[in-house]
Image 1 (cartoon, one colour):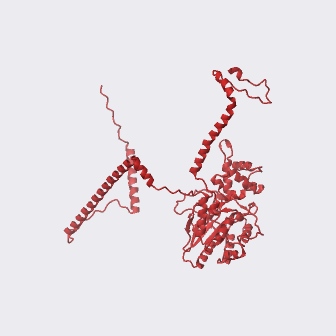
Image 2: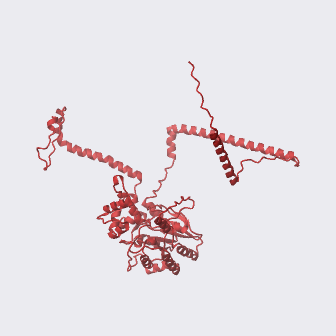
Image 3: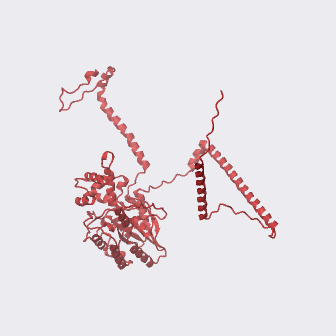
Length: 549
């Protein structure tokens, strides 16, 4: 029986649908033509009018045009032929290489010829960070030590200052108080007076909202919370950059050196070194953020023809420092050497409990764990089942303290004597060459413009004094690479089972006669009787041996 022919689906449409499609196509073409007209792109290629008949030497012009066309075609053919030959040679070489790889002797000879690759230095290692910091100090004419205005004394590194003073080339050292908008005004003024006895001091407030000019910014939402707008405006403002620029420019003009003045920006992590450079430049020249240890190597940024800033990685804090100093200045949390919860507990010990309760709007707490639970519930950091996420709460708390958000201050040490590496002659030498009157007026103007927090709303913090740092590479112990650490862990794991087996063998030796008796009764399973607790009566104890004998 013949199969019936299947009819193809009809392509007929209703008139309204067909007209609708035709109209859409017309509109689309019309739009394309309009856009092309705006861009100045014409679809129609202008026709070559050729040589007019009335032109003299028409035949010669046509002959030359024909010769040029033939010449272009010949060149195209030559290029194609050259490409074909290259491909053939490449295939030939690949075949030869494959045949050589199969040959074991040639493979061994080739391995011997290849030089060993140099080990790439670990950019996050302490030795590498110290070497980069020393490079910055050696390369700079002026060293700017950036201090967090909330704890200026804790951000000072005696080893760094001593190293700068002992280097050759009469290097200048100045102190820069950053994040002054997070400290009460009276406290900032006292710290400037205290620190001016040793080095020139510049008051500064870096901008934290600078974005790269090349990056296309996201569209702003129509409705924005008022407090968010206020925070952004505060972060975007920068104060003290004109004073610092004029100071460095005047010093560069006084120096006889034709090259630009090299200014090294140094300090502990998260004091605002990269943000300072970005504020001076006006664009995102260096990576900056709340996370500590973002800058790994030195970076040059030209501010003007006469001034060049050099960004540096943070100073490596010595392990001999107090726990509170290590919590704020070191990278132990980022490196995984210390838990965030331990850091929070250390910081809470250094503060007044009532001020913390008022700042974070939490009720009374007994310890750091209870505080983190309350803080997590307040912020909505909850896991499955409504369990507070203390880890996230601790990370947020630490970011508030290290970033440019939380307002806290330390008491000024008025009767502080000069350090051992400082003297009156050194102080006079460091202040020589600077326009101190101009600096003083610039600081006053900066303090007038900045909006400071109230003394009552700022948390009082107990400073532990200057933080010791590691500068010489010799002081830092050699760190194992990731591969070496894995090998060591594997070896430890392999050693453990051997020890366990030895212990088990020793324990099993005296039980040989028992094993012999068990071998005789292979068909039965015997359980050892377990001694019962004192609290349980012997009548209630169940003897398994009764059922399995």
